[in-house]
Length: 226
Image 1 (tube, helix red, strand yellow):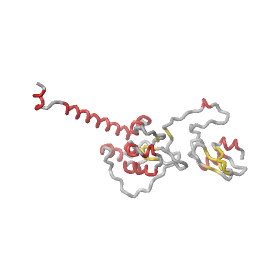
Image 2 (cartoon, helix red, strand yellow):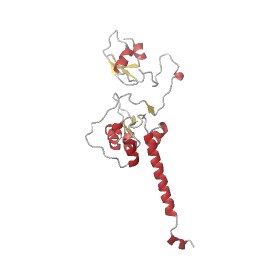
Image 3 (tube, one colour):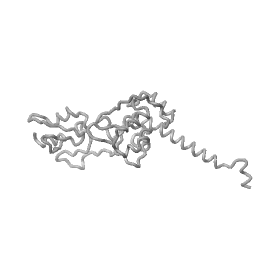
Image 4 (cartoon, one colour):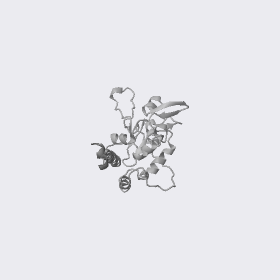
């Protein structure tokens, strides 16, 4: 098999017999024969690979000018690329107390959510049980409240998360990230995160008003001001 054809199809050599691996989707193929078409085989076995679909993924074609290659955002990814790994859950989903009931009821009754299976906070939270990334496992409660559930890769570990409502993904999480702020930053049109943000702002406003009222002297206190 011609190494150039394999490289042009997105593969690199693994140094194990005739096994090659895609730099993007991480699929490995072997047992090549002379008549095989690397690109066709890549499409056949991993049709959702971004490289196969010509989606910008950082690839630099042989002989191309690196400065002309489209860059992809660090945080945003295309969901569904590696498929969803659903967890077998037998326990009933309880209404999450952490999320305001008004928001939860509206969202659960909205049939336009992309992944209704994860409309429950508890189910989103449980999805992180299989996560091996400390960065997001430590903030799983925050991520679940922000609408995210863990999206495991089929070929290699990933810290990719998906919003159950808008179906969009975020990855490359850092310890200092605020899931709500990152969600609204990258996907401001998501109805779920907009409702959460509105509820959060309302709660903060009520807290400020309460604090302000507590600072106003009562009738009995006026004698100390004379």
